[in-house]
Image 1 (spheres, rainbow, N blue to C red):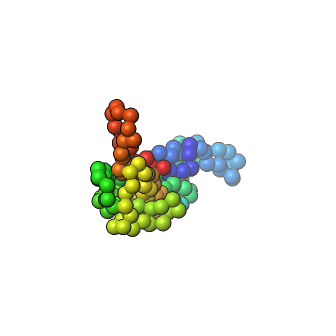
Image 2: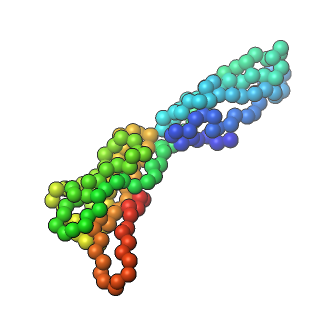
Image 3: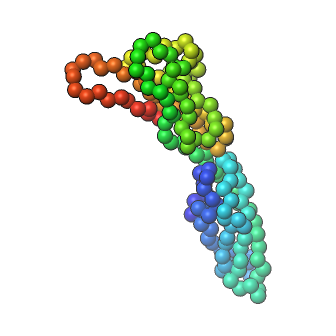
Length: 171
């Protein structure tokens, strides 16, 4: 069916089908392909998956095994980090207490500039109505990094009405 998985999926997500060919008698052999262990959830990268072929005519043909190379893609993270909204002037990024989303694997979350350079949280003052970039880099090679931006300190520019606070937007 497909030749790729995404990290976290079991081999059972790929359905096996086909026939083997008897080269001596020049005919196809009917039977069933199965994974040696369909519950395996391989790591991202290339994975050699073991399969088994059980012939319909077990009196004439023997069961056989083999392997096939499966590509396992990295999983994409979703969601946004947690943080403390800034409600007053003269605060720094450190006051925002940026933390990874609880559904993410272990890794490092940082405030970064538009070029990806890490910002000093103790000295970078949070300005009103300004979006700040964040980046989460997982420790595991099974996940892609995720990044986004947050407007931490929102100040109404007048006009009355209700005030809404922007949320983090992953990209």
